[in-house]
Length: 134
Image 1: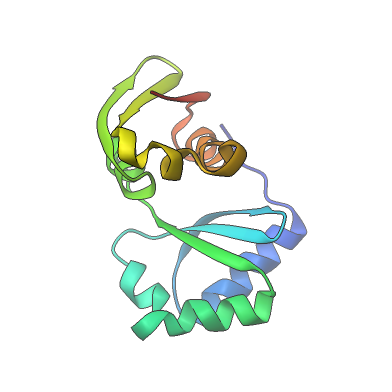
Image 2: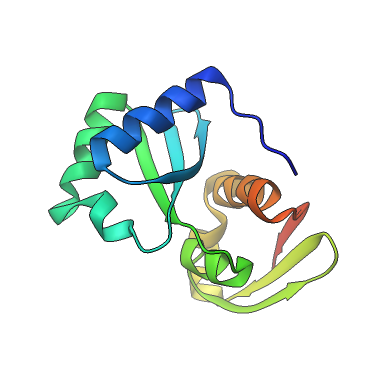
C-alpha cells in the first residue's frame, strides 16, 4: 500500500524528529494522540533519559505521544507493539494474533483503539488488510 502523508503529518514528523533526534518511519494522529513509528534500534535515544524527550515533545504538541519501534519483520514489529502475544498466524492479507488472557484487554485497548491504530500501521507498512485478536 502506498502511503500519502498530509501536510499536518509531515509537519508533525519534522517537528518530532527535531525534538527527539530520531528518524520517523510513519505517523498517525488520532484525536488527542499521536503515534510515531521510529527507526529500528532508536527507541531509547528517542524517549530520552527518564522519558525527558517524549515529555518535552508532548508539551510542544499538546498531545499524548506513543512511540513504536519499526522492524522489517512484521512478527517482530507486532511483538514490540502488542503485549502478551503467544502466536501469530499470517494469511495472504490478514494477521491473527493469539494473546495471553491477562494481557488481552491492554492489547485491544478501550473500544478497540489499540487494534485500530496497529491495523493502520500494518496496512501502511506491511500490506496487511486485517488484524484479528484471539
